[in-house]
Amino acid sequence: MPVGDGARTRRFEAVALPHLPAAYNLARWICRNEADAADVVQEAVMRALQYFDSYHGGDARAWLLQIVRNSAHTWIGKNRLAGRVPLDELESDTATILEGRWSAANPGPEDPMTTVVAEDEGARLRLAIARLPLEQREVLILREFEAMSYRQIAGITGCPIGTVMSRLSRARDQLAQLVRGEQRALP
Amino acid sequence: MTHDEARSLLDAYIDDELELTTGLAVEAHLRECPQCTAWLAERRSLVGQLHAAALRYPVPADLGARISAQLRSEARRLRFQPQWFGAIAAGLIVAIGGFLLGQSWPRSPDLRSELVSASVRAMLGPHPIDVLSSDHHTVKPWLSSQLPFSPPVPELAQPGDTLLGARVDYLGSTRVAALVYQHGHHQINVYVWPRDAIAMAAPRDGAIDGYHLTTTQAGPFTAVMVSDMSVEELAAFRDRWRADASAAAGTGGH
Image (cartoon, rainbow over all chains, first blue to last red; front, top):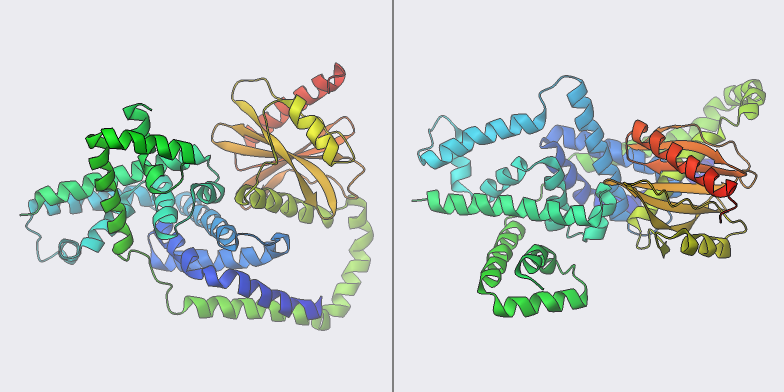
């Protein structure tokens, strides 16, 4: 055991750490906040180390992402219990305000966020994705940014493949609607 | 293929997730449906925009270092523990060992995380189910042919519970039956083994990493259910499962 643990940790690092970018990206999109996402990933990696003995090869990225996803959901649950403002509501309030300002097409200089959003197509998409309900958002992130198959996403999120399919379609529908709406609103 | 069917499959078509024949049927529809063709083009451009917009968040500069440091300190802690705490640990083991041995307590948490990991791993792997069938007349003989025992395979006739199939899994070095059920959005893995096959106490009910476990006995078998459904739902499922398993045994059913 004394000799093995250093080697075990090194083996774990070789398996898990290459997937740190995917892990952080997923946590960041679920938590919508940098500091919490970093904490979630750190906790998830330590948890993965605990379970490493039961990892017998295979898709390491999906394995790690599932642990990250569960940790992030636990984090969301804890925040709700602790009486903090539910993030989804907070986010959609903010988004409604922003949306009103976009269509007003006259962003006030007092709102730097609006200015950034108006300037940057990427930022607009980013906010649109952040507004998606969590269950759609995580599926979209795994598909579009991690290029995972429906089956892998089903494994990570614990949903049947049919549910993955319909959540992804609804997420894309909403984004398409938003992009179309903006094109009309632009001068 | 109708227009609505084709339309509902276009996302999966873009993602290359359709089986060959379904994909061909979608393509045949696209050739004669300008509406779907236009929709597909718009959708592809949206997906292209998403990929092009560099929306992934990069790992914060210090996170990698933070994690490596914690991993190193964890490894050090484990490595030096026997030297620093060797004497104390030995004393504790002697003092508590007899008590714990009687309860199989130290091994149960291992078995529990092993069961959860096994079901997570299986659901992530390429073959979560080796024999895909909702018919116990198919599943049970297959399991009997793979294992040195013939586990109960209740079909759960109640609406809402579906037997998806089974696979053979390992707990440590012991081969066990893993039945897979669907209930609502949740899947339930039911691990079944002869009570004497694994030399440790059946795991206590509990939760690990978002998954719940519950244990029951069916005749000479131990069955452990693992799922991400709620404790109450899982307990209800366990009771239905046990009722059906003993009903089948009582009527001599196989």
